[in-house]
Length: 309
Image 1 (cartoon, helix red, strand yellow):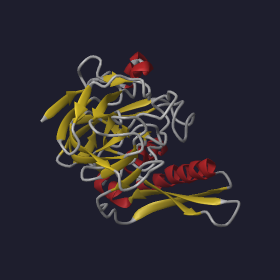
Image 2: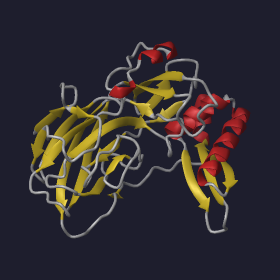
Image 3: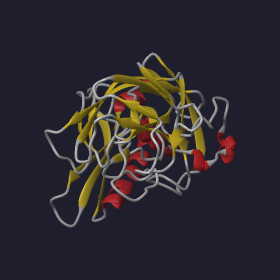
């Protein structure tokens, strides 16, 4: 089985472009294996604290493993990427970045380290002490090359990229448009768990080994990503806060502010609730028809609070 090692020098790229040289080739339908670093490119170490965050080289963030040339893929085809297995490390990290995230500017920088064992993430500090976050690994970044131009790694585009969609777990199939011959497929950003929206800017970031298969589809046309995903596990009762505004992002902000404040009744600080939603929460647009306002709902499963007590 072909093994593509993201820890090897020169194996990561930091922009989306159809001018990049492939680092490997795969045949359609053949399984291959990937070693994918965490989103910091291995900079954040297991012994780091919040004070160490000043040492981060932001230019080395969000590097993607690839591009990988898929034999036989032609411009106009669709590439189906099946994620067979995701094996994560035994630790991960989450960070509040004060100048990033849905509530940027509200909370100071903070680094949280997690132990990842026996199906759960557990904080290694007093922050979120006792909370057990169920592990549900996925890849935050999967993409093909753009048709033209060059793009930064963030935000996501019609060819995929940094979608941070927690539905794309092992067993999922992601379909992407092929914009250039060979597709030029890339992977990055393993997450041990993430809430919908990744609201504080990070999930439970970790490194991973992944098994995947790429197939060529010519029975449909795509202008953007499409996926077939496994059934989601039931989350049970949840605490739900609603934000209402004619601006969708402002409605999201208001729902998160309300949720973080309300979580105090369950023994969580506002900052803890913000991080917990980023790694395990849910979001939905609950209402959009009554113009001009939207209703956005932010959820936290009550089982997370129960595990703490």
